[in-house]
Image (tube, rainbow, N blue to C red; front, side, top):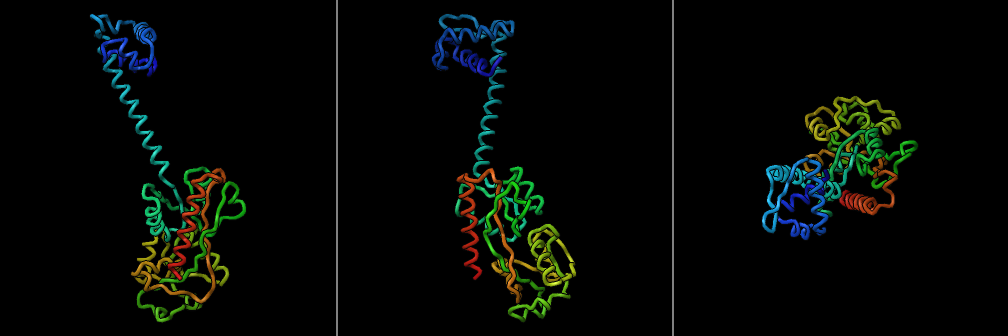
Length: 298
């Protein structure tokens, strides 16, 4: 018994006429009669019987019509639901990042540029990003510092931003009186930061190694809001990209530091997506977003 057979039988049963049902279905009357006979033979019971110029349902025919309608409704729902899911998937870009500070602004910019689409963002550590880009769980990743060496085996990337970090200081900290903070003034201060493996922390580890820092870490969190609250609560200072200055409540506590150090942010995607128009389109959007951001922060 096939779905096609149930659809054909249901049409004939609802119209109570074989020839008219055959015309509606676009098949010959003998072919439709053959399908119904095959169903009757398979079930071992008559389904339709002649009545005037049409047909009437037998008791078994009434039962099969009811069940056929239930089955066909369920099948139609499956097709509708899958179609909706595919439509949503095609209009959604899945992005994983370890550079969470840029995400709120990027979401707004993406919605303004593509109002009919959705940007779905998840956060992960470096190893999570590599794995999910490789296996196709996400479409793109934004990572800092950029991947290198064996990390790029199945991944392509484009450096999209060079970020110059500064620090946010607790309210009342004497260093807020400075326009630019000397990094040596930070050596003995407690630090609030993200955990090892997060984007900002990856850059900080390189920074600490270069300048011989052994930071006094008071709190670690991958949630930027918790880091902000830690600083505002006086737990310590935090290294932050300059984008935080766009938030007035935090920006007043931001100060540049007196070293010309920067981290780089890269957009990554699976090599199998090279040449796809969607890849080029999203890469162009991200590049334009960071170019505009750079202008705002000058």
